[in-house]
Image (cartoon, rainbow, N blue to C red; front, side, top):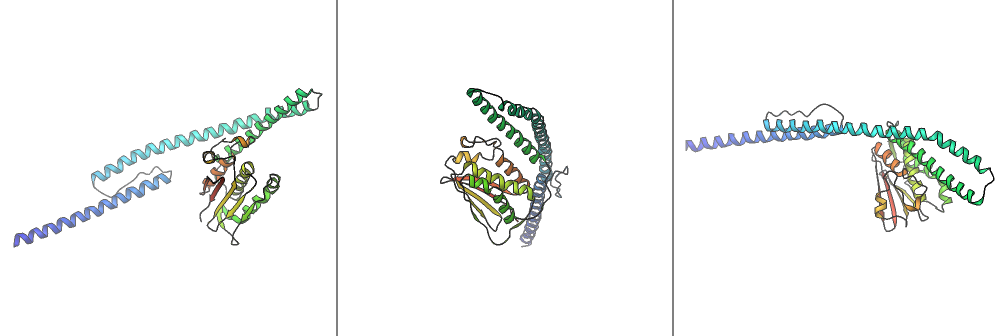
Length: 294
């Protein structure tokens, strides 16, 4: 009987030791998981540290740290490359402004001269292309500046009021396009801590997009959870085209005067402020959803 008692005691001790080992391993795994998540979200040179003395756990942490160093190096390389591209675009856009302005000036002078009908047609075509190029250069400059500039100063912003102001700013253009917007907002003020100027730019770019593609309607809904939905019928679009609307420089045939940067800028600004923006196409309508969570 004594040996049976000793065996039971040994088994209890073994189980107790194993439980402690499992608890320590789980704690070490949680440390690695938390540390990995924190280092993905922060730009820091601090590596993952674990309290466990288990050599396999410590080896796992060391290998993850190696991959984190490589990931951080690659991220910085991409960020520096992206910054260089933006600065180059800004410089090119700025350098092209002067000769383009001169071209526009000479075109104005040429319009005053006697011309044949054919020359008038050619001049009109040149003016149209020059104006499109001028608009593209301006949008390139704005896009590069917007996406490379540091975040603006955030403040408590009334979503209702900013949305109303944006709609009012485009009301004449909406009327000119035969669009009478239908607006639904709660009486309760929806407050978020955001950059007011950036938020106005987002709303205005989305409304401008609706003017380009709408078949003559626009519904705007603001919900109490901070979600804003812009929807309109758009027979010129389809599901594939809608999925590309946030791509830089993407346009469709029905929007020849568009540079394809409006919604791309809206997406960049929304994400800079921690929001979400999506677009989907359903039953002949396009839905652009913007959400700023509390």
